[in-house]
Length: 77
Image (cartoon, rainbow, N blue to C red; front, side):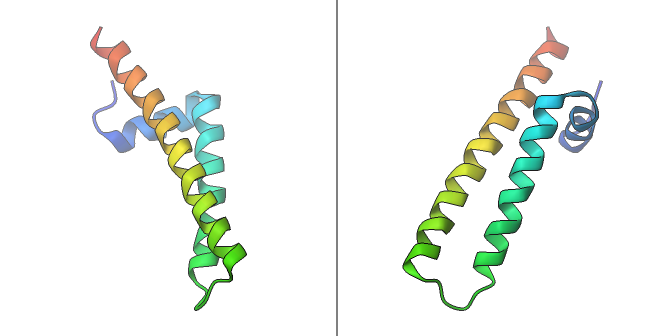
């Protein structure tokens, strides 16, 4: 059984296709967001895009956390 959150995430990246797909999407949006945040000034369109990316990242993170919670529950049961 995985001992830490990071060990569980590593295990899921190796064994769970859905978790891996979500993590890859999360990383992609994270990089896009970093590129926007590196700019000294954002246009209105870029601000809207920044907000959209943050919402998508949060949704992906919630989905990943749901998978982690289900896996932990399976090991407890």
